[in-house]
Image (cartoon, rainbow, N blue to C red; front, side, top):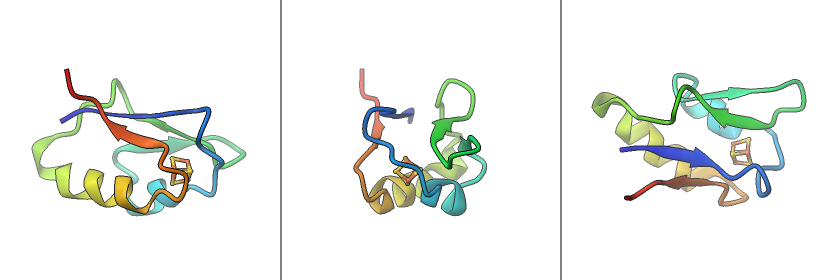
Length: 65
Ligand code: SF4
């Protein structure tokens, strides 16, 4: 599983970071980006899905390719 944050949609508040600090980092404004290249270790996939479901801006997406 791999995820990304759409920086055009993210408005901050860092809810994703609160739910899954292993997967996201936030800047001084609370805007989020994925850690590393967005690859989610299998043991953190539930947390990734929780973050996706709880982003109020629908800014986190799973990359499927
Ligand atoms: S929860 Fe969504 S809008 Fe909020 S910081 Fe994370 S990606 Fe951005």
